[in-house]
Amino acid sequence: MDIHTNIPLKNFTTMKLGGPARFMVDVRTTDELMTVYRNARSKNLPIFILGGGSNVIAKDEGFPGLVIRIRIPGFETINDDVSTTTIKVGAGESWDQTVKRTVDMRLTGMEALSMIPGTVGGAPVQNIGAYGQEVSETIASLEAYDSKTDAIVTLTNEQCKFSYRNSIFRSTETGRYIITSVTFKLYKSAPQPPFYDALQAYFDQHGITMFTQQIIRDAVIAIRSEKLPDPSTTPNTGSFFKNAIIEDWQLAELTTKYPDIKTYEMGDGRIKVPTGWLIEKVGLKGQLLHGIRVHDKNALVLINESASGYADLAAARDEIIGKVRDTFRIQIEQEPLEIG
Ligand code: EPU
Image 1: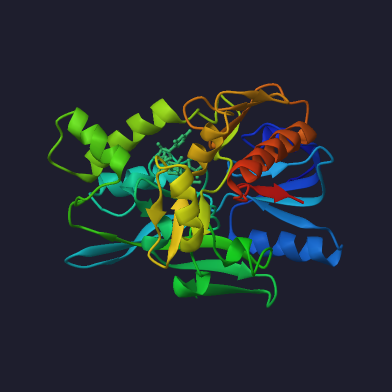
Image 2: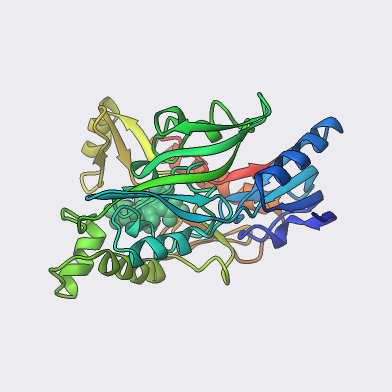
């Protein structure tokens, strides 16, 4: 294991911002992970865990401690019955390559999550979701290094407390667990309608009436390629904001004022309001703020066009949050995590 020093985080995050990490190391096994973690802790170094860097923002001052990049490989079938297959995947595997492998195996459950950048270990942290699927629907359990008890533990789906773009890993237990592998239970039955609106619209437009995992994957890739900038060439972190969640009493006021607003029932009395719509409505879609472009095809996405640093991104973000709050009295939230 080589420990590198003074590594610019802008080269390891898709937003292409941020100063140096004091130390950075790649780990390929759980033993390596535990060794470096214990070592860093004994020296009182702050620790940050990095996967693909596609959902994190680094600051100009960098990170004064050790960044551990999880590179743990693995893909194995651990159970197979008439209707399901269970696979265990190393946290360092590419998320999209994992989806591709399951689609090639004709397994249903993660095909709509095609083309999401990042790693398998990053997926549960923010409970990635797209086109009607959330990763929490197929996670049976996961393994993690528990830094509190200094042991490898298995957490069940329930213990991860998944909700919209959230889990214990970025809320109540931030920094405690380092995910080393994820176990998914997938289905052998073909994908079934109803499909997410944008997906169904694509099928209608292309006269598609038969659905396989590969057909869904191809459609999602086509839609994403059209709507979302490629993080490998255009610096961005996908959705920069979460969709807003409001209580039902707030909805009446909103729909009276804005009859064309699109909202989604979450099934628990709360309502999801598309933040992309809110940002578009305040007139910021396509605008350039402090070197940050509000994407002209989806206002939820911010692109680092020419920001001189984190401060520019923060200024653009706060301007957007402020305008939405002043107009709608809705407080929108940043989605990517911040390093340090
Ligand atoms: N909308 C607008 N204007 C915009 C963007 C969206 O009016 O500029 C409206 C759309 O017309 C639609 C609704 O908002 O009625 C939802 O839009 P869309 O289906 O494009 O999805 P989204 O809410 O913008 C979410 C996820 C995406 C995911 C898509 C598809 C979040 C934070 N984002 O975006 O995830 O791909 O749904 O399922 O929930 C990500 O997290 O990085 C990400 C890309």
